[in-house]
Image 1: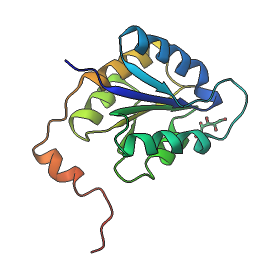
Image 2: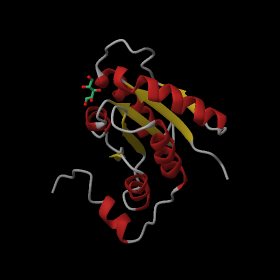
Image 3: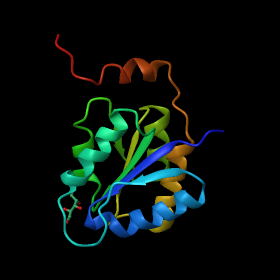
Image 4: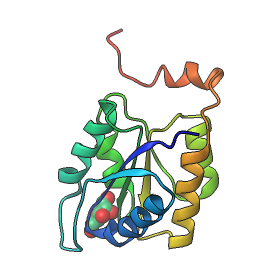
Length: 148
Ligand code: RB5
């Protein structure tokens, strides 16, 4: 099975987890681009989240992983981009449902609130769960704002 082309990003609060996930994904033979940040020095998550979201939205990457302290800030940023469906995934089942029901293309993680082993499980599940389509396709097609 062809592996997804991935993009990963974090702010300083997610940096350590990003580095661990990056190593894990490369070991699992994924092609991954690191969108930063590159140290634990304080940064502003929108500066890093927007470029990643743009690259996923344009189709350069199949999926993204975005991490900040709570997961909320970076999740809000990436979801501003048309075509992005980012889910805040804080356990394995939420992650599975984000793919199966919401066809999420970005997995947002709360770096300060999950363990390393939880993060591996969440990401592994996200990357290996197929969208179920059917009634869920009808629903996700209604997410984008249209001019009514
Ligand atoms: C950084 O201190 C923290 O505010 C940020 O990582 C994130 O949790 C924001 O939503």
